[in-house]
Image 1 (tube, helix red, strand yellow):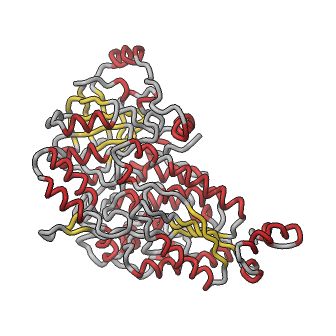
Image 2 (cartoon, helix red, strand yellow; image 1 turned 45 degrees about the vertical axis):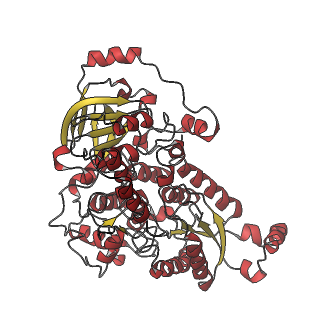
Image 3 (cartoon, helix red, strand yellow; image 1 turned 90 degrees about the horizontal axis):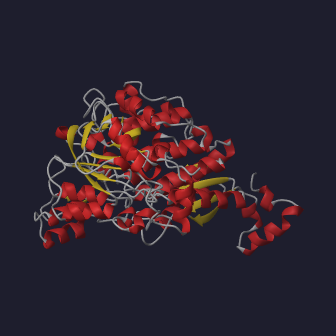
Length: 553
């Protein structure tokens, strides 16, 4: 066993003495040591139940003959961090999580790992760590939140809550109306109930083969979630015995499968940051161009919130991620020969799986659209690309041209939006919010939700070198690369410049002559860094561009 180095033989006697100090018995140390990486805390709704998940996992490990050893990982609640300096600390935690988990796993030489994440950066951070350490590993999340319900019977969710604030500032909703959303949008523990980033990534752990069926969709409050956790605890022992490791599972073909499922589900644009970063740890390169290639032949089968009015509990009832994968297999869009954490191939896992609700998971023959949920646009404004969740864009905004309204921070933009200074046809440009310039690449959910809440999502586009929450809808184009702080053309845009967006053609253009752009470039100077000390300052020095997944170099 890998753990023998800390528990077997005379040389390990000092190590054993410390393990005995923890209360472990000789019998327990003779079994495989399984690290249980639990992201429980008391500030993230998606993580408040993870102590129960961890106990279920440990029960499964013991039942299968292992010794579980729990240790923590951090997690940030993006919703609570939204709209202030705290959001600068969201994306950056992905690397803190990966680094600290790597350190714990390597320092203590566990034989296997069970990862228990749930929310946005926690899932990719632990996937990155699993790939780095490359000992047998399996994922089991805390599960999604149930949708809320308003007094008139309508279901609701966090994205509606953010849009309610915009509606208030537009005079369309009073304080009592805001309070009703406030009290009903998030009714249970779990990751927020739509196809936002957390649920997108948890669904993709199934698609890439690192989690058991139901991991992405079984609601947090269902007892089936505890049973899933016990099965994950038992399954890790099989993976240890067979020495099936993350890089045996997360191959180039598996990433291709994950991006295909991503397009069919209509996942968050943040997946375009996280999948390349995870692939990087596996020695696999995912490019923006690959996303468009996959999207072009992958139909969009689901319109969960914010693209539609259905939620994760509905997707679970319809058959979950496996049912979506089964539909994709009808068109031979997945490599079903790849290995998964079940110890079986995708083909074996999908045997007998059916789509139980064709109104929620559209049949492959009658999709919402013939192309996938995400598109990458390129042009002189974004030479290296930018990303839009096209499945959540109104038809009339798929092609748009309008004058730029330029802001050098999220705060400047939100002030103008709330003050009613943004008008139909405008293209809001928010820059110096990229991985380096932010630093930390904040999500722009407040501006996009304000625009939607004011009823302008069919008239106004928003472009940023920052990123968007999975809860964002509308013509919201993020990850503009190169970012402004790295000298990207988005830093040269001036108030009133015409910007042309053509999502079907995958183009974005700043309608300014090359000569004028060169004149502006010669006069451009990079602003002073906003933060010069601490972790964010170190992060800004190391982080790469969004089109590379914002990995640290």
